[in-house]
Length: 383
Image 1 (cartoon, rainbow, N blue to C red):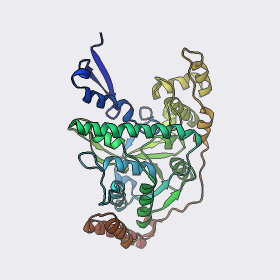
Image 2 (image 1 turned 135 degrees about the vertical axis):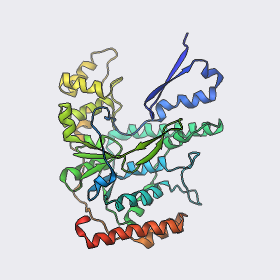
Image 3 (image 1 turned 90 degrees about the vertical axis):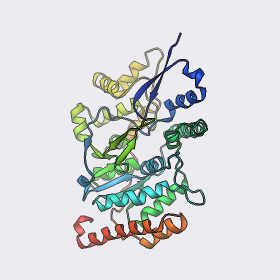
Image 4 (image 1 turned 180 degrees about the horizontal axis):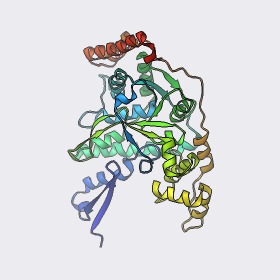
């Protein structure tokens, strides 16, 4: 007879053991926990176990240009900037404003520290991403249901609220409007923003690509900075424990040398584990994928062996996905230059249209303008 129930907490990367009678004594609570296996999923491939991540301080990025994946950053702000019950910040008309708060206050802090930020927005995704987008929408629907159920049961549903975060056209438009009013460069990617950011870093037009995902490395970004927008304290799920979230840098060339593989093989490892474009092979994590690539040499040889097993398994469109990572659709039609912040426009938008606190917005916008004025007197800092 089954006497224990196991559930993996993807956010905390740990496994929780529950007695079998738990499901009978606390059915509502069990239904909530049961959903965690599919709700707490990140975006992109997770190669964190393979690559060396160097902790840095924000001041280490002073004077450096960073190309930021706008979609990824907006999603982070929507997830973490919330009220205690998980409700996002909203104006009097019910419009979400969490992302605008993050963009103004956190980005201004970065700029005051000397970090030069350019935001890259997604264009059209490749056709083979359609299934992933559909699955993510379903996960967010389940998260929204779990959030409501947790609230009804008197449970802490904050993480379900986070997982239910959605970016719609209005959020993207408002985010872009604020970024432009702040005087920061906006780059429109023809396809994936991470690919465009990686391309800009490869060309040397920016010093880093910034994203929470590791996909930027698969797209060829020489150096990727993580945790740029979410630096600070973060509460662990279901625990009254806070951990420090610090920025970290991953060096692609150094990482490949340490692993003894090529970038193409790193892409193939990512495909085996699962990317934004495929679900990966069953029970294959980064370390196992690395072992297989070292043994077999390439993805074709690995899949040939997988197809001979029972049950047989393969990865659809793997060649197209690999090609997309190695040669993504990007553009050279962009300009990276900070412009004069439009203080009146920032205040008008956030205070009059989105109900932000007037004093705080004006103070922050003026801080941003002061950085620009100082930059005009020492042009080498910004241009």
